[in-house]
Image (cartoon, rainbow, N blue to C red; front, side):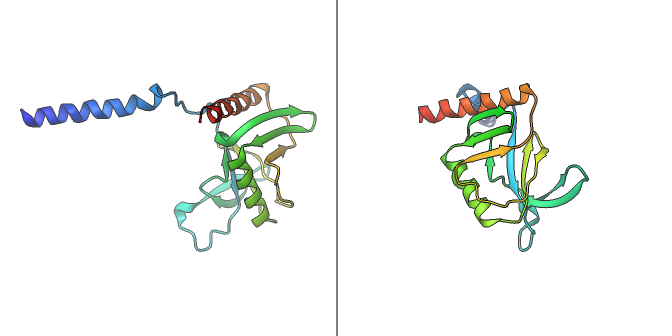
Length: 159
């Protein structure tokens, strides 16, 4: 009987923990933005690197598995005739500043939902926290990125 009670409490605890994030207001992003930097892979664990195919010819490069910046650091998104402009919070600004200062000549890979959308060679430091992608995106994609940025701003205001 004691054994059965322990399993019931364990099951109830696991069930509670499963639904806790959803009840606390956390929800997965509707769009994933990942910014990675090219690496040689030398001296790194195979788990620390991943291979990415670059458009248009499918050239493959290795990038660090952990992204330098994500949608979680977005605070503003706007699109104009020049393309889309992504503005990052302080954490994202520091990350972009560091990665572009230390990796000149390497490729910065921008992925949206796992698809490479921009992959420039780093030729200057991004110190203002704004990453400009010189292409247009469908309005639905821009809206999702803007929603994510607004959610981040609201969340930062609460903390």
